[in-house]
Amino acid sequence: MEKGRGTAASSTHVVVIGAGAWGGWTAYHLRSRGIKVTLIDQYGPGNSRSTSGDETRGIRSSYGDRASGVLWTPWARTAIDRWKLFEEEWARPFRTSFFHETGDVIMRVTREPFITKTVELWTANNVRHEVLSGEEARKRWPVIKADDITVAITEPDAGVVRCRAATQAVAAIAQKMGAELVIGRVRPGPIVNGTMDGVVLDNGTVIRGDAYVFACGPWLRKLFPYMENRARIPIGHALYFGVPQGDSRFQFPNLPSFNFPGVTGWPMLPVDSRGFRVRGAIAAAPPATGTRAPAPSSSPVAPDPTLQDPDLSSRWTNQDRVDGARRFLAARFPILANAPLLETRACHYESSVNQNFIVDHIPGASNAWIAGLGQAEGFKFGPVIGDYIAQRVAGIEGDPVLKKAFALPTEQYERPPG
Image 1: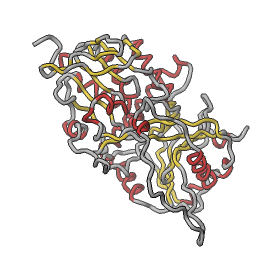
Image 2 (image 1 turned 135 degrees about the vertical axis):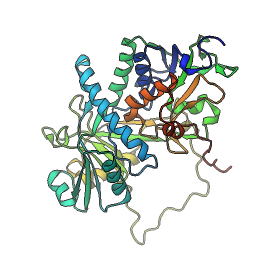
Image 3 (image 1 turned 45 degrees about the vertical axis):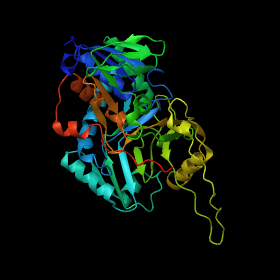
Image 4 (image 1 turned 90 degrees about the horizontal axis):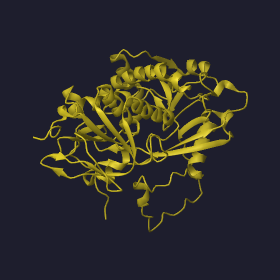
């Protein structure tokens, strides 16, 4: 057997495709183990087409609404600890700040199952938290209009990370540790006798290693045809609004990140003052009684195929989304109802039919891996999932429960008719 082929444990040079949150942290942890790394990204770390290209991401462990919450909650807590360590070690050398301990509050009109299950998971994992009445929540955060809220739960040490800045920093640190960064688009090389033989750049250059990790988010569907109906790549939109001049109530550290049904967000971070962040919206009110609703179209518009292609999809946030976010502000943060819109961000996120991450061999290749499908939550797990991927590539299988949970799903989404 050729040296370095066929067994992950023999990997001395790993090629990581994708320098986003998962790929960058995988490169970081592989280099920490002394393994040679070539890190390839077609547009560069933290680029605006990437899933890691937004400006901020929430870091929390409230997963009472997820089937995988039992696995994710302790992992998310470990991730919070590691983001804090990353801040302590690297904020000063970069002369900036990455992690902000905002705390997180989830407010609901009734004590719905999400609240109950999240508290159960927190209690089981010894997570410091609070359960507040609506009255207590209104006293603590008077800028939030919460007259109808009866219950709120908090995770005091949750926070927000400056996503793009952190992604670029992790890639830079990996390079400082000896990883080589290559900017270019690749396609998988041939699989010969059960092992992948290189990846090929657009210019024909072949880059070979002992193992390959494809951590390329929504591009997995383009690289591997069998992923097309095992993954969905919807686009999420985040909007950043200007806070009133001289009013610190909507800035860190005076307001936590927040969660209402269908909407999340957080205060402005003073490092770069992008703005008050809102993701999600409140739907428009239905037509008044006696008003005729528009008749449904007899020929529905076919979905735009470019929206399923991360290279071609438009990231423009339309007025309907802006209006919906403003309805949320008017309902919950009325002082900001007419705040200026400073910028918007949009990115594909990846969901799988089994609602869990994938860290598994590419079918037929013992030295090549798929690592992806972050379920719109993957960024926060970067420091942990990167370590896990590095271990798997190094031949350490670890917890069999995780290995089974992160296996490539055999089931597929139902194909649309026609």
